[in-house]
Length: 483
Image (cartoon, rainbow, N blue to C red; front, side):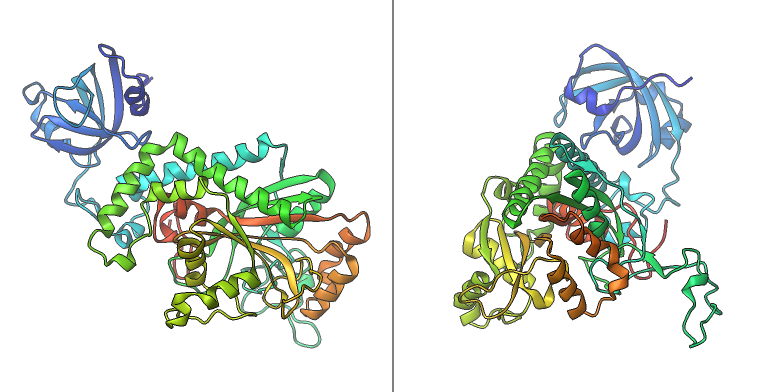
């Protein structure tokens, strides 16, 4: 049986000088044939192991290399050197897993994010990615804690579905039919009745519609699971497989929905600030180093921790879409032709518009509500016609953050059977696909609201990473399905 080890996080948090400890981890650095910087993944900090080269066999010394795995036993003492408060004076040292640097793809130097993406089986050993994935864990835990502590029920919605919640059609098809020669009907179309599920099915783009079933029985639920989009988008903001958090609450209107969204995201950020500050400080320093040679207009508006405090310390500004358009059209950037896209009523807000509202105009996070129905989903509640608003709007809302723009999209759901049926017909969605969704309104329906938070988008904001592929362990994107 292997000797019980002490985790480096525990040693650094509550060092017990004079204790005999055994630690195991990966070598981050080995200086002067004497000082090992050891990390076991439990913390951003390294523990210094002091070895006596005269007491170690030469073949062992040669194997103490970058990312080799070692086990050390010795006494914990106060450190005499700079950079650490304690260190372990090794009495024994064992190589658990050697590392041949001539063959190892990572080297003890700065690597590009693109290179590390291709080496995803090793990238978690680096300082940056170990911090990112500890923070990812923290946010996931905080999601469940937030909803559990407030009486929500965690609902597992299906990954394979026959409905397209967004109406976008960019879905991955699931089938057991032979790809080259599927069975056909008399008119030549594919006979889906012969498929495994007896109908056309896809990987889900959202758990929302099924989540509404839960809310209209259990009162308040949330989903947290994988979702899929077959968009051919090779960008820093898109993934083909990502995770979504979707609360759905009976008897909540759009105002309640905005309250929930603000409270939820502020809780998540506060949790990480309170429990993983060391990782955030490391990531903050990394960003400052990376951006110091960039022109001012290419840098972030503030440091990472400052930006997180900016979100948790401010009440979110709440405005209508119409008010947002008016603000943008009165702004100096618009009058000087600085916007790439013209803000006009009836068009969706672009990232540059969202960032101007948050960073320059209101100088706080912003929730925009009451969007034109033309570019919103069929299930959003149709508003009464409002004075001064040139078209029909729905009770939709987006939460906007600095630097990243939209992080949450949600709405009050349309609970009126006749209005929902009319919207489905307007958008040419087959009624037979959503018969059950309509029946939720027909029999014991209730007002209800919800939203979706892209988990990776939130991890990206909290860690400050610029590419969404760097906040999920094994990214799935066009032409990318390794590991």
